[in-house]
Image (cartoon, rainbow, N blue to C red; front, top):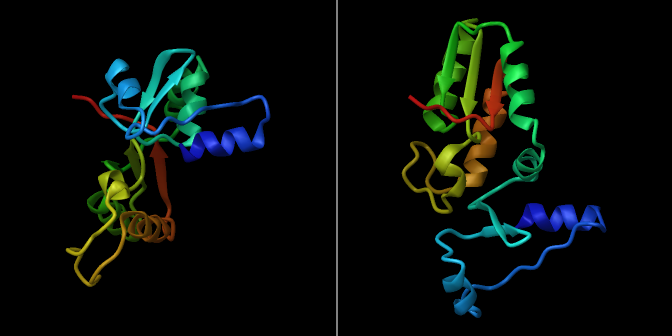
Length: 157
């Protein structure tokens, strides 16, 4: 919702309406909403769950996937390509890059599920923190090294 709010603020041609599911349960039931937020464009389901402004623009751009594939194919091969941008992937990238190994991370989004976690109390050396704060620190640490972070990518196998 923050991404849509920002887009509407920056562009007067973009309008959106937010509906509070707790107040309008009939609307939630009629659309069979299973995840919050659920975004509809012209009455059709557009996306569910957390989306960034980049995610929204990519979904609107019919050639976004082709552009992303071309950009990935143009990259030189990596010595180590880490699938997943959570704490384990970040740690692996830092260790590899510190050894001078050409390293890349591919992830749907950097931080993974930790990004959605509000209370973290089991991370060694950190008594308590919030997911977005931890992810920001992880990303800053990874960016201290030459690691290519590629988001918006899903691995299938």
